[in-house]
Length: 161
Image (cartoon, rainbow, N blue to C red):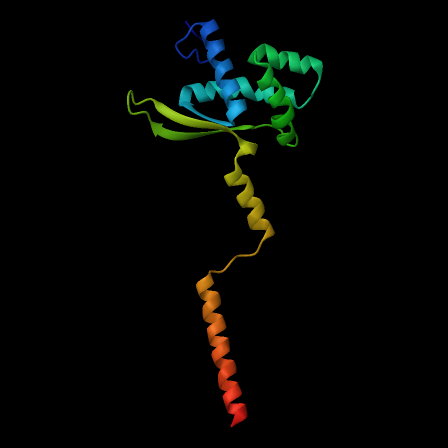
């Protein structure tokens, strides 16, 4: 019986599940966005978010703890340098899961999991909208110039007469 067992075993033994989550976490940290099944994405979020929280405190102990979860030196250094600097002012919720539909072969629910602060579409559009005014099209600018030029020409003709 699995009363109160909240971990999703993903149909794997413990060692295989830990290896799977380690590889998914390394891929997420390296690429900032990966596509996987929805169940794996939800399990990965529980696995990687505490690591990102630990990366905010750059000590030898936290690096060793992260290395024990990831087992890849380059990924750990990228986590502590690049990722930790971007999420320094965020209190949690470092990942976003977006459902992308079903896989064609076996109809498994697919999802995209990404690091929130590395999405340029959402982050830049908010800052760009706050900082700049609404732009107009070229066509409307050209029409205004033509109409004002015509008014100036009419006023110049009446002044000459």
